[in-house]
Amino acid sequence: MNPFAQERLLFTPQTPDDRAIPMIFAFPNTYTVGITSLGYQVVWATFALRQDVDVRRLFLDAQEPLPPQPELVGFSLSWELDYGNLLTLLEQLGIPLHSAARDHRHPLIFGGGPVLTANPEPFADFFDVVLLGDGEAILDPFIAAYQEVRTAHRPQQLRHLAQVPGLYIPSLYRVEYAEITGAIATIQPLDADIPPVVTKQTHRSNTLLASTVVTEKAAWENIYMVEVVRSCPEMCRFCLASYLTLPFRTADLTGSLIPAIERGLEVTRRLGLLGASVTQHPEFFDLLAYLNRPDYDDVRVSIASVRTNTVTVELAQLLAARDTRSITIAVESGSERLRGIINKKLSNDEIQQAAAHATAGGLKAIKLYGMVGLPGEQPEDLEATLAMVQGLKKTAPQLRFTLGCSTFVPKAHTPFQWYGVNREAEKRLKMLQKGLRSQGCDFRPESYNWSVIQALISRGDRRITPLLELTRHYGDSLGSYKRAFKTLKGQLPPLDYYVHDHWDRDQVLPWQHLQGPLPVQTLQQHLATAEALFSVAST
Image (cartoon, rainbow, N blue to C red; front, side, top):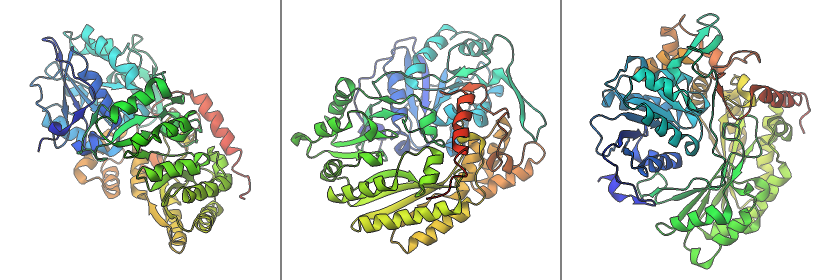
């Protein structure tokens, strides 16, 4: 069955005019996954609300009627390994994979999303244009600038687009290396007409995102999503979601958030409250009071994540009454010393209190998120995590506890971007698994091998592009990546350089010419604050 026929739209698409730009906007995964992305939904709706754009959607397994000669083809990239699907879709459309091989017969290929905003360099050869930052701030300037050079030759189009803040044209920058298997020497624009630095664009408003479509075919069936906050005031030093999206913004409760919720609940009774730290909205408890109205008794409410010290009995009661059985808390570690290093402002007493309140409010489970291999971590910090879980089981024996645990992966534009993946991380995951087995806690470790691949792409530069293409044919496993490194030996640094090595503080980073919310000097200050705590004894 056609999935588009089952959509319930919360906006009215405009009828494109005769001169509308024919565009394909793609998500390099299945419809079910793509339509669940709030960012993809909103960007598509933004284009569909314009009369000067005729936008059609494309997924791996579904598509609207596509224009025979699109001028623009866009991709929203939310997960690193979706790059293989991106290349598959380009092949299906008959478009050369590399921008250098395209000419006036081909559309401009643009991309955005968190993966590309953080570090587009591994994928730079695939895109003509990369949109850095929030769609609300960059989509309209992008279309306006393209309209000005719509009939121009391709090189002129790209040079014109390069003048728009937040539009990164990879082909207009030259990367040179001290040696082909070593660090980057310089990243420079081809000439003085091209900006030496491209700055991420930020949407500075208290009106945030809300779903533009609701469908039972979404991964979260029939859910209406509203963004309650953007970024996070905690600024954990490993956290891309916090640092890359600064500053912390909150939706205006009565001016935009509640009206958005009311619109959504006219078409569905399932509500998702999104944000890195939803309960830190300054009027969160007023929002709870609003949702506690009798006419919303049949509404199922889900919250992406909660701040531990905001878990009250009232919150737990509301969620339990709205068909939510558990809450999710990111604790990272049971060690208060390690939490100090990463700037996680959280005590074990607060975690214990949250568990007690969850029990009193009628919840059945708590999902904890932890991490191993963080900079400064010592073996005793893992013992502290085991002790924390043991204490929680005593405090709230009725609750079911799940600990999801990942391996630290360095992310661009964060203070820990200079640190590599801890070589002991896999052993530490197994240590936790063994220790938690006897405590009745469901331990769910994230694949260590996936963390290695994620780190490779997270810290990658343009030299890994051939490796990604080769690995696509070998298969997306760690063994395939290692095989590709052997094949390309002498043409790029070894795997350890990207994944495990600690980088020098004065090293040219692959994203050095792409300015995030904070300058590199500030990130180094935050890192120095963390490192000053490395020698503090565990408690």
